[in-house]
Image (cartoon, rainbow, N blue to C red):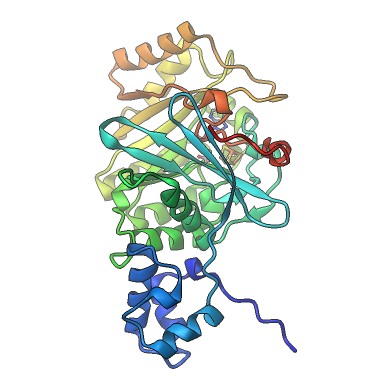
Amino acid sequence: MTMHIKPSFYDFTLPQLEEFLTARGEKKFRASQLFKWVYAEQVRTPDNMTNLAKTFRASLPDLFNFELLKVISEKISKDGTRKYLFDVGEGMSVESVLIPGSGGRLTLCVSSEVGCNLACKFCFTGKQKLKKRLSAGEIVSQFYQIGLHLPEDQKITNIVFMGMGEPLDNPQAVFDSIDILTSDHGFSLSRKKITVSTSGIVPMIPLITKSGTRLAVSLNGSNDEVRSSVMPINKKWPINKLLEACSQHAEATKQKVTFEYVLLKGVTDKPEHAAELYNLTKKIPCKINIIPFNEHPDSGYLRPEDPTILKFQNKLINLGAQVLLRKTMGRDIYAACGQLTTLKNENKNKAISLN
Ligand code: SAH
Ligand code: SF4
């Protein structure tokens, strides 16, 4: 007897689902009907999909696994940030962070991998080699499941791929998940409300351009020497190559690029770095997102003092840059977006209290 493993429903883009169903003798339009039930109506029990033929409904539990990723814990920070830990099997877990913003904005920061091979020196995820690339369904599931946890009157409005992992190291699943999340028959999210953040895998940046989503790039160094010392990928694709790709994206999409810049005490936080950063980016339509380093044990780096952070920000503003200075959200739950740690493993057995 061969073991039959059912595919997860959430792994299928609409065209993939159409192909899967027609190969099994079903009508093509069944795929969009299923998308409507599962995503638009949030009905995951085939019995309740009332406009489907009874025989088709009855066959669904054998065709697909409709289970979402399980939430291991939910932690709510004093500032309203929520961190969710998901079980992705084999003892592994990933985190997503929900960040409230102004004007009803609710941004979900999703993970794309467990661990990350890019090994940026300051990053907790990068301290662990890649353990798993998430499937499209596992990415979609983070959004779906957290949506179910929200009060009726709240909705996730934006998605950023700034959690654990490098999205461009897992492009198939990432771009499939974007197709699923933006499908007209499903959640209908706008591609402009989705941002993909990369450490700078230059030849793959056009994939972000093609996907119609927004580009964020982790610059984190204002010259090649500093950047290479904190981000090994810079040795392969140095700043000039990276910025060329960013310019092309901005040109093709008429959208601003977001440059993330982590402030590391004594390493990237000097006034001359601010000037260099401005000069590097001034020709590109962009916003600069200053992220004070979120400290984690044994990182070897420190967060600069507040006055240094302010000085850096003001210098950029005075030069004419558009700067986003985020308060480091969720510090008390150790979960600024982009600094999703794997300290969770120790939390896992602790039965975290939720409120
Ligand atoms: N791999 C992608 C996306 C995930 S990291 C990338 O590197 O862009 C998302 C952001 O978090 C990056 O800008 C990264 O520089 C930043 N980051 C990582 N560790 C951090 C830390 N400890 N404190 C603050 N920002 C951090
Ligand atoms: Fe990977 Fe991004 Fe962390 Fe670098 S910053 S190690 S690319 S997750």
